[in-house]
Image (cartoon, rainbow, N blue to C red; front, side, top):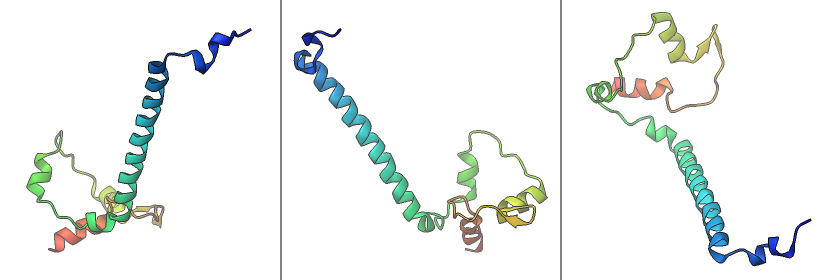
Length: 104
């Protein structure tokens, strides 16, 4: 059986404040991540048209870039799987941004 000393009323103030602070900090962090995700989703069309020099991109890779098989590369670029579209959602890594920079 619990005694009357187990209620929140008898807890030290600093413990209650610490628990509330942790909850608020976690909530703010998750809200900030959600807002960043929303911004990326809304502006993905503009972001995909940002062109970065290829020399800079290859310099920033953590390891050597492997060459893909020609057929696999074609399927990846077109978003095709066995000749059928499987991904109808537009992604930041979609090939339209690469085509835009290549044509410039």
